[in-house]
Each structure stands twice: as structure tokens, then as C-alpha cells.
Amino acid sequence: MKFGKQLDRHKVRGWDSFYVDYNGLKYSLKTCYAPLQRKARPNDLEQGSHSSSDGRGGGANSPRGRAARNSVAQVSDAWLAELEASIDCVNDFFCSVADEAESRLNAANEELSQARGSGVELQLKRHLQNMVQQLQATLRDLGHFAAANYTALYKILKKHDKQTGLCVLPSVLQQVAKEPFHDPGKTRLESLRLRLQDFADALGMDNDLQLAAPHVRSLAEHAWPLMRLSFSLGVISMALVVLAVLSGMEPQSDQYSVEALAVT
Image (cartoon, rainbow, N blue to C red; front, side, top):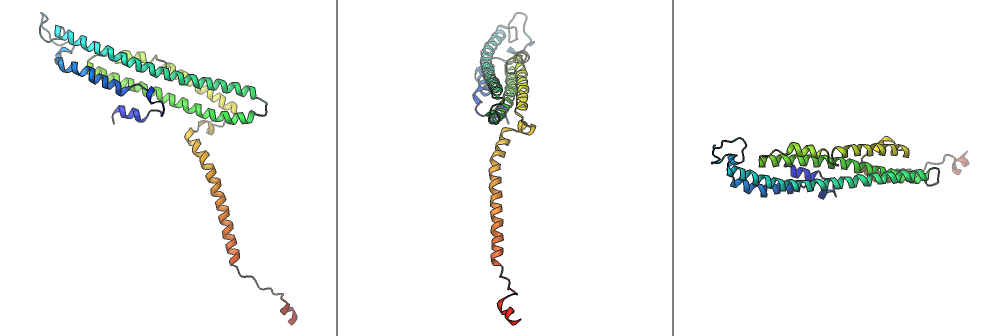
């Protein structure tokens, strides 16, 4: 399966439009660079190819070769600007989600501090436990979001270099590592996870509850009423069976009947 389809399948639901536009960048490469590639001779774009001493011919240093390289460079610059815009979109979304998670965690800490010793503390803790589960899922999804976008950038830059003959992959990836969604993002997510762990401990959440995935917990919550219903139906069925057995039994004869006593 091609990477573009794999990326689409693994996107976090609702976040689709904030990923690197891999398919759009791939299409731009195809539509913008392919015409230049067809017009230029193969050795016009090759570095180190043979050229005549007077600059004539089809070598890399010939007028034709320099013009071809300039055209490719211009297309590459325009494409890299499109790539930059896509990276900015990833950064903005990553930071906005991380900011929201941090704000919710700060607000929850403040609420819990104010409710200490009050009559609503227990009820508030139950509410905040649900929030912890939601934030945990958000941080996990955000980590997957960052990793998928980095992989998408690597794949599309590799494709760019292959089609253009340029070599921008190492330098661009070195810069991408400094983007807010990558190395700084990893540090920020780890800090938020540790803070969330401490907050969960303050709520008295056990490890199973804290580490359970939200969909697993949701299944358990929906299964509990069914279990109770099944148990109740089982008890009712057993009671009906017992009644049926008892109603089918013939009454025992009374050995101390009036007739027997009269005989004696």
C-alpha cells in the first residue's frame, strides 16, 4: 500500500485537515516538475557530466544545462514554500492542542485545591477522573500526530530529491527537528504526561484506571449494566424453574389422617 493511503488510514479522526498535505505536495511535484523534466535532456540536470571547453553542447555547464538547473531550482523553491506552509499548519495545530490540554490541567488543579475538605470534593474527583482519561487520550493522539507528520515529511522530501536531482532532504529534516511539533513537542508532551500522572495520583486513581485506554473503559462502562441485567434474568429464571418443580410435585399422604386414627 502506498504511503499516502497509509497516512490517511492512520490519521486521528477530526484532525485530518491539519496533517502535512502529503498528497497535495506529491501532486505539485508531479505537475510542476514533470514538464521541465520532459523538456530537458537527461545530462542537462546531471552534475559532473561532460561539457565542451567552449561551453557548447549539452553539459551541466552549458547554457542549456544552466537554464535547466535554474528552472528546476525555481520550481523547487516554490514547492519548498508550499511545504513550509504545510509545516506551519502542523505546528499551529500541535501547539493549540497542547495549550488547551495544559490549560485544562491547570484549571483542574485549581478546582481540586479549592474543593479540598468540602462536601463536593468526592463528586469533583469523579468528574476529574473522566477528564484525566480524556487528556491522556489527547496526549497519546498528539504524539501519534507528530510522528506521522515527521514520517510524511521525510517521505515527500525523499521523493522531491529523487525527481529534481537536488539534495534538500538532510538540511530540511535538520530544520524540521527544531520545529515545535517535533523535538520541542516531544519534551512538552513528556512534561504534560508527568503532570497528568501526578494529578491522577492526587485523585486516587489506580494504575488500571489511569492506564486504561478510553475505548476500553467505555466498553466496560457499557458492559456493566448488561452484566447486571443478565444476573437479574438468571435469578428470575432460576426462581421460575424452582416454582415449576414444586408445582409438579404430588402432595404427600398424611399418615395421621382421621380414618387411620379411627381404626386404631
